[in-house]
Image 1 (spheres, one colour):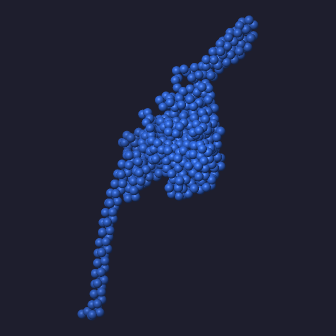
Image 2 (cartoon, helix red, strand yellow):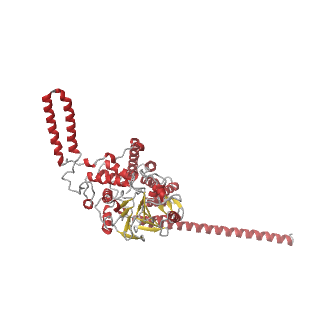
Image 3 (cartoon, helix red, strand yellow):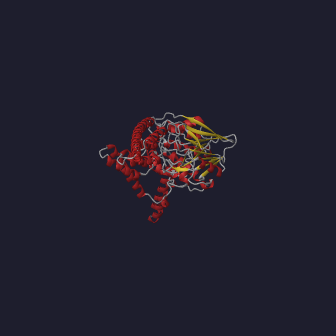
Length: 576
């Protein structure tokens, strides 16, 4: 028999076991409910992520690429293990020329799913857009391995291989920088033309008369004077050749604008723009004359140009125009032609993308020749060989002018100034600011700009950097330069006793954007960029002495049916 004490102990044990079992049951039930809730939440997150992706796809189709990026980001936050979302966001970044961000997103897609071909495809396209052909080739080779029967992948791989082979060939035959000769110094535009000057009849007649006289001398005085005869004939024939060809005139059947003498006049520039508007070409003689004269003017300028706007006068700053000639004509229609009383600064990226880049650059250069203080020109990241090879300008120049002009423009672009300061208060640059504090205007003036843009340093950052909303500095979304915050802008302005930074370099929906507490303005002057962005264009007018920015926006105008990138690298056209 059990005692009362033993019974109490047994009861206690039974109670503990019961409570333990009950607690275990409750915990298991809670875990099941939690797992069920988590499964439901996960299913809900997956569903919501798909919904965000679908909305992003629609935004992308409508060319609202910034909105698409925001929506893809929300999808990624809900389900970060879906490679499709990362690859799609990479594609949207590519459309905004944010190639560094595109490479990061595509690499993440590959990390999630190493067999996802579009991850390699998107990354390869971004590398290609940056001119990194060897890296692009590796990715397209991987696409071909994953999709061996895909004809599109095979075609793109073949084009990429051709691009790499061409690059290697050009590297092999190129002379060292120290041994390269100036293209400009080998050109005399006076000799370009098929018809000799009318005055060349005189040296021709004189030459023939001298030869006849020399022969008569030999006949009279004998063979001893033969040496004299040979010298005389050589000199006279040289005179004949020089008189015939050193002063060649433009052929009479050419009906376009003509430069009379050495001076570029407003009448000529107007006629040239009208010809360009009607898709007529400028004679190569005059094109050479304009580019060579511009080179001479730019060569004398410092890397940082100071501009003075007198009280009561105004000054206009335009951003990227990117080969959109008919939109440039619209700017002049809205704001007047460049003149001493109506001066302009065009802030880089005159060429590439748009297919009327030759017309743009010759027009801007012609105004510079006509009146240097009527128009100022800054270098952008697209005034460089690497960009021109990819985005159309090189092909367009070769088609509309000649191979020699390709080299000539590349040389002259190296003479473009890097930045301007207006009335000691407004700093104007194509890209942005720097990876270090303490940069002074004197440091910018001291830059040796007569070269292709380097991949790092002050010159690179002036051409490539972008503002960011967060303070401090961050990696560039383009993969070149950096991103800089409002605190960086504020310190730069304070260090140099400036009030405002004006820059370009980025398409904006309204044609402009004000950032960094009003201390930085982005202006972009190519509306409906690449015929697909739907953005407005803008320019800024400053009135002295207060120099407050007055921003004018405008929409795109029609242009002839020549698509953007029509002259671009074959490989790039596949992606556009």
